[in-house]
Length: 99
Image 1 (cartoon, one colour):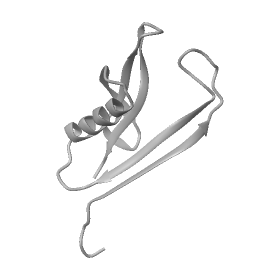
Image 2: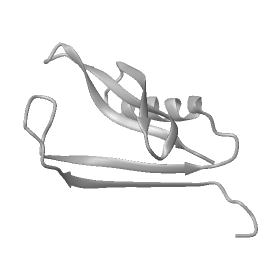
Image 3: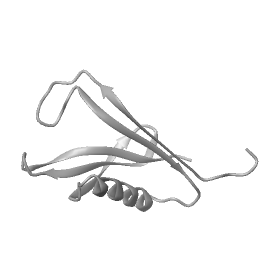
Image 4: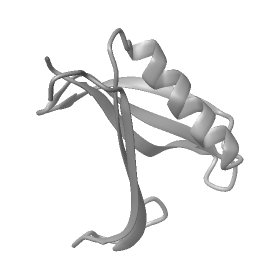
């Protein structure tokens, strides 16, 4: 394209995986994916977007942990404290695409 235009794309879909079932893993769940493209975005922007997203879902106790993802750097996992389980559980994964 001749001129760069910032964009945001999101999708929500049901996902199935062959997983041993326990309190933190199900064989079926809904997955949200998103791509935000703009100049000058930082990891702080990503963390703020994720915090806002989860807060709107009623999930406010969040922790971010560095992680490895093959296509993004930096990458991080998102954890929320689960009152019923009395522990932190992973609720998301994310990263910044490499240039």
